[in-house]
Length: 210
Image 1 (tube, rainbow, N blue to C red):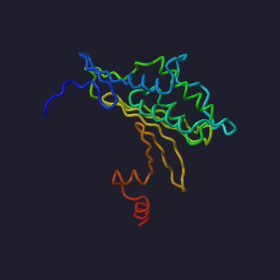
Image 2 (cartoon, rainbow, N blue to C red):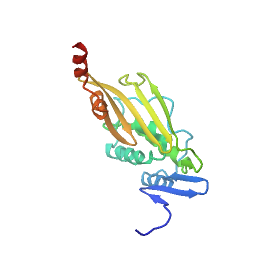
Image 3 (cartoon, one colour):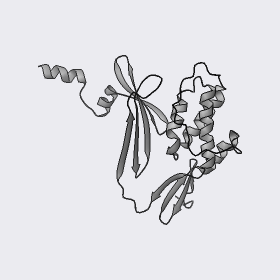
Image 4 (spheres, one colour):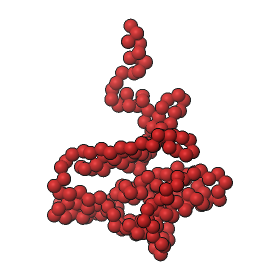
């Protein structure tokens, strides 16, 4: 196997290897999507979203669903190195079936924020310990539409692993609909028991009764 030199670019991620650490960013990709959606000459904003929650806005004017989904997809790919926009991108993604003008305004604010914060990324210090640190927070029944709970987790230090979870009950079974590193997964109690090789709950109850 021949060496092709020091890694500087991988799957859209820019990698800068320095003496004191590694910096991973996607500022070239940010510049590309700003140009693609015509946000080169816009007024910037210091935050990616407003403090008011996004609503369904049933009476609002509809917008081009294909353009909206294209913008969502472009931003989803960016969240691998830009965790600062993860929450608002996921919030906007909930309305991609029937987006309205208010949702598009929220989306445009993300791009305006990116225009002013082009070169943010992930910094891994060389002398950082190889420890896994977890952060979590939850918003109990905070969804304005269905009063569902939202849970967020971040595992960091050696690597970054971000997820957001929304709790739902379907056919009497509690489910966690999660977005993990940009991919949607559904977690149920039965799937957790299967993966951990735990006995079935009904079997355990019957054994306890014997």
